[in-house]
Length: 389
Ligand SMILES: Cc1ncc(COP(=O)(O)O)c(C=O)c1O
Image (cartoon, rainbow, N blue to C red):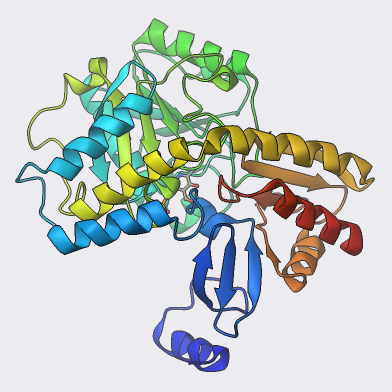
């Protein structure tokens, strides 16, 4: 099918819920995709922050091929070698206190299970989240999302969600007491325009949680699995070395195979009993093969170090641009803030066959490239920006 035929069929048979680029992705390798028309695009959006290992990483593809010839799926009613290995590997790269994994299918589902676990562990209901955070589109996670229109389109909202100001410990202290089950946040607010907070903020949150017996939950659906140049934001120097009680993951975790996870410490895991949580597809064999191979590929190809090198290189390269106000974010989760709206830059880059993303801050262009993106590919972005700006 050519592009016109593909577009016509999708528009005829799919609900029109997405604003799409005028291309059809057909195949990919590393940080590149090829379209139905044979054109090549540099993907600095990583398939929506998902393809951390690059498109079709050979180790991931090989592992999926092997697993699909053995067993595609059986639920958690049976034990499985690949699930055992994936869980062991995931826990082995996590901060030491996070000792158990719960597998599900998406970021939203991981977040909803995390909030449920916090309520179960504390026997409380209220959750503090933050202005500008995004946590997903199902009832509980959309109710925890104090960004733009989301709570409005998610009505009726789940009760008990209260909102503090991101980066402002005083606003958290004024809400925190013994009725709060969890403080729940994206440690770098990606969709809001890659907004960051100082390590002291996270240290303060940990102290408040310890004082009132509140669970600290990090939504690491975007920041996790190496994206900031650390395996996780929690436990890294970015968080002042503090570790949350629960950490949620999805996106990069399966290199494109849908999978989500919660990592929890013993304080929480000891409170969770048989049948408290569950999902049919969570922990399926194909998804587990993807998780294990993704973690191995990131490790084998030293992608954490590469993500940091990419950030440093771009930071330096952008200094020559007068209309770049700041580079926000860490590693391969970056937001270029322009002095004006970024929409024309986003469109100009697409014309130059470079895919980037926008954010809910009209001036911030988001980059979420594969962690294996090369320095000379970042130079292609810089050259295109020189042309456009
Ligand atoms: C920080 C964050 N949390 C949660 C989600 C929801 O994840 P999913 O779309 O896999 O349900 C997203 C999705 O963009 C996200 O960026």
